[in-house]
Length: 310
Ligand SMILES: CCCCCCC[C@H](O)CC(=O)SCCNC(=O)CCNC(=O)[C@H](O)C(C)(C)COP(=O)([O-])OP(=O)([O-])OC[C@H]1O[C@@H](n2cnc3c(N)ncnc32)[C@H](O)[C@@H]1OP(=O)([O-])[O-]
Ligand SMILES: NC(=O)c1ccc[n+]([C@@H]2O[C@H](COP(=O)([O-])OP(=O)(O)OC[C@H]3O[C@@H](n4cnc5c(N)ncnc54)[C@H](O)[C@@H]3O)[C@@H](O)[C@H]2O)c1
Image (tube, rainbow, N blue to C red; front, side):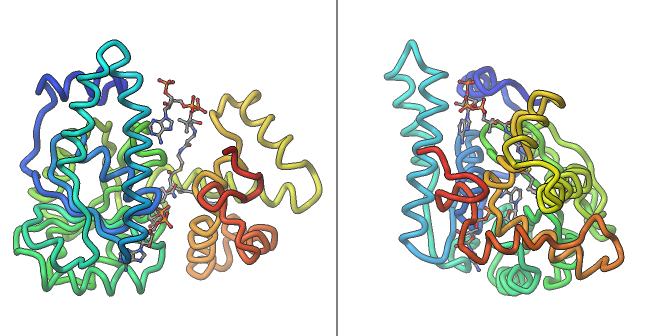
């Protein structure tokens, strides 16, 4: 059972959160999601190696982790800043970075992949990790929309393969979807569930169906919001206001698209359209394509449907 973040960190500091068999975790991809996953895994006592393509990218990942940790620590240790500093130092000491994926998985119990939403790129990565990682290492993908089995076939360890689908921002969102394919062994699935709980998340069991649970509902909703604007029926601002004040969502669909990344949204919808060309829910959007072509990828680059707040 997950806890509000303050209680959760307190219980971690006092050792009351159950630990899983997984201790050493490698996270591949240090973008929005990988950095968040690395932060929470290290905050919950795991040894974390975070991998990305260049040292410069990893510098940015590290700095975003530090900023996010500062937010957490500022609240949690408001009355004891020294203890906050010690917590932060401990978390950062459990986190290191690496540009060579093969070296990073040498003593890994679990690899979580959070790279670009592209099947061929993910398969290529896992095929090479399969050769480099020890036999016992479990592999998981954080894909938003690609069937886990289509990625897992790149390896010879399908029994040790599953999905761990986190939500953005990882330090705040409590849910973790844990996905099994028919080949996933009970032992692997149980270890993934236990790891998710050890990270303080509420887990739900998912089958390997398109979008699992959340995105099967969220993607059509977000795309219909974009189509509503394309049809000239409302502005992004009015749609966002309507969904926040009328449906109680914390962000409107355009704010959320900016938050997720327009490139990631495009990868998802293009992939589903190619697979299900007759389903109008998955039709690509000229407006989304235009923004992506203009490099307006959302908050991560400072502009998407909106200009990002500084
Ligand atoms: C078209 C296809 C699209 C499909 C997309 C699929 C994508 C994917 O597969 C699935 C997803 O992730 S879907 C996406 C799922 N995600 C959603 O749906 C997100 C929806 N949005 C939200 O839930 C809220 O707007 C936020 C929580 C993001 C910000 O909350 P807010 O009230 O607007 O603003 P606030 O006051 O600033 O922050 C509130 C509290 O959170 C704390 N904090 C925030 N960021 C932090 C960080 N990085 N680190 C640490 N802490 C962080 C902050 O300190 C504060 O704590 P306090 O104790 O209150 O002082
Ligand atoms: N953005 C979201 O809200 C969200 C939520 C849940 C799941 N996801 C999924 O998580 C994954 C990552 O999404 P993101 O938003 O963090 O993307 P991102 O663009 O922020 O980060 C991806 C990172 O992967 C790195 N990368 C790409 N290829 C690599 C390789 N071969 N080896 C090592 N690193 C590589 C890139 O340099 C980049 O830093 C995607 O599969 C996405 O669908 C995204």
